[in-house]
Length: 461
Ligand code: MN
Ligand code: MN
Image 1 (tube, rainbow, N blue to C red):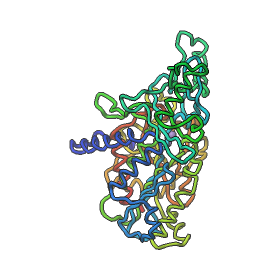
Image 2: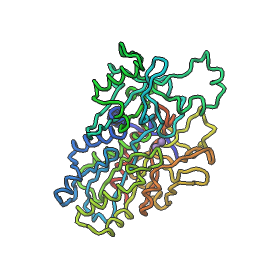
Image 3: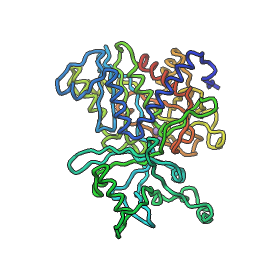
Image 4: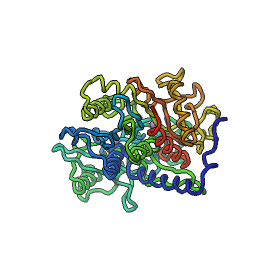
């Protein structure tokens, strides 16, 4: 009931548009495997669309006018895009929000060691992962090393076809009698997620010759020494590009759909907006959602509120009251992926309230666990407005909750933005194998999601 298969209605022309958008999304996914890379790519695309840096406007006290387009880069890990509307900013903004951090394996601060003639980096995983999924597959290393001088060294190893990859080994099945009887959370222990990065010793070196050779290589190639790991942020992610999935190419398998499949269309909807909007448009791509929206780059920090205060000031309103009114009067789609109904694991879903692949953008009135704990529970008045906007603009949508009651749960950034009193609802699309190295989405859902965001920016009040 209420759900229909989005594929049924596409004309050949819309099918071609959908495919074009899917390929642009895949390019974004391949360019951004870390939050920093996503921000770099977003800045590149925003500037290409005529957005300028808010810092420059602040420095020159440039008075913002309707139609002006600015972006704010927060610590290189979050980005906010704004297009100024004709209505006074205190009447609120139409906001699209999503996160650009994804589950992964981070390198520890003192990581490098040698054992059994092999060189390793020790790790600490980030976000909720099934650890056993991350072994015995090609992995890449992305991130930055910041030297004591402040010089920042960018690292990407394992993406180019000619690059080497890195790897986490698993126990051979022949000797796995004990391991195979363990529960899934213990099959691979967190401390065993050590990344194999080398095996050739430095000739003539007697003490830890493999480690010595690796240190020499790091010095020669990147100009970094062992202590520089102390001030590095290196992330181990699946190596390789996203792929079309299915004989019919109707799906995409890739790393980090959660939540770049919401982040990219949110950004694109603002970048692609034509003309001068009535209400100010905004997209926020934030960091640290996967570990609870904490830290200076998480949605729990006040960087967004601060940036809106700067924006209001540049629109001519320095009063704190205007900032509060602007936030209170805003409408937001807080977008994060939904658990796609998986027929192989049907038992954990309640089918009529589950997100079906290919059935359009998905709204979650609430998320959370247990008795909706930790959830933003959107008002029905707002939900009614959303339904109307979707129907008026021919967007296929569905509603869902995260699995059966008491089967588990999860949270998003929605409740944080709701603190300002703005209307917020969780939106997103269905994902299979969420938090696995390779996740799956439907191109039809991606397309309906983009149409949803464009309609929301145009019509939300
Ligand atoms: Mn997410
Ligand atoms: Mn997640």
